Image (cartoon, rainbow, N blue to C red):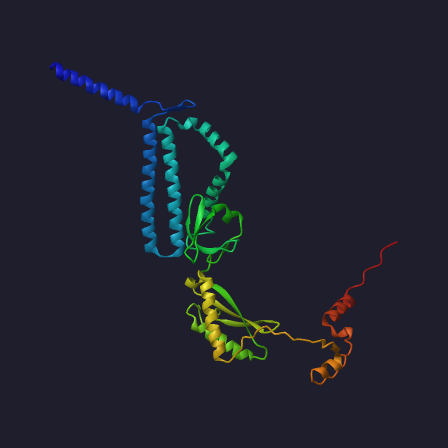
Length: 351
């Protein structure tokens, strides 16, 4: 070998040695653990690979879920995908610890440090993570459910993540709710067991309106709305007279909604109100305004008959006082008296 070739070989070897030394050079040393560029690169690579594998796996499950179609099966497939995702990340975490020089035998020290961190500031994050796991296994809340929060916000569950659950409202507003609120708070799940839901639409008509005509008009309105589940059978529309109001007879149109309409209560209620107004007007039924009787006690400083004379009106005849009501006319009083009379007498206490 000539002298120039030997020199080039020595230079290449020295460069390789220098590169290898930089790759394994200790950057930081904590508690006997040496962090090197090689270890950090390997740890990051493990996390990237685990994330990509999880992403491919979950996309495959999503395609399978779209083909299966049933709501419960989609929720089960989503749960499996989430649990595999968390498992892959946990395995990648353990491998990353090995690559940076922290073996499993020394992981107890690191776990103790994590425990201290949870005690000081990470307990909320840890609580939300555990709550998310509970939601996935408990199946009380699934992707696709329509829920109403204690604050009054309602929407469809779009995703259950590691920290929060994403809810999409009917106005296409996405709300992130911490998972712990679903475990410790009160949540109304409108589609937990049955996707159908009964809706009550209140309305009022003027006193003197025929009840049968009101019922006919309300049923016609229910039939005109395409969200009504059935026209016959146990879930047919019903009309209830619920209250004698101050100015109106108050009714409720009670209807069972289809599965699609259950998740849009505000728009569906507006649709029924629209058809109700149309049907009531078609049958000549009046929706009354609030009514009040005006009593004038004095006019122009005059009272009683003199005030009526000044107004040019005859004074009304004085009404006779109603006869006194006997205590026996009160059914509640009669029931109490009868129960007292029929009750067995208690023995006198011994002296």
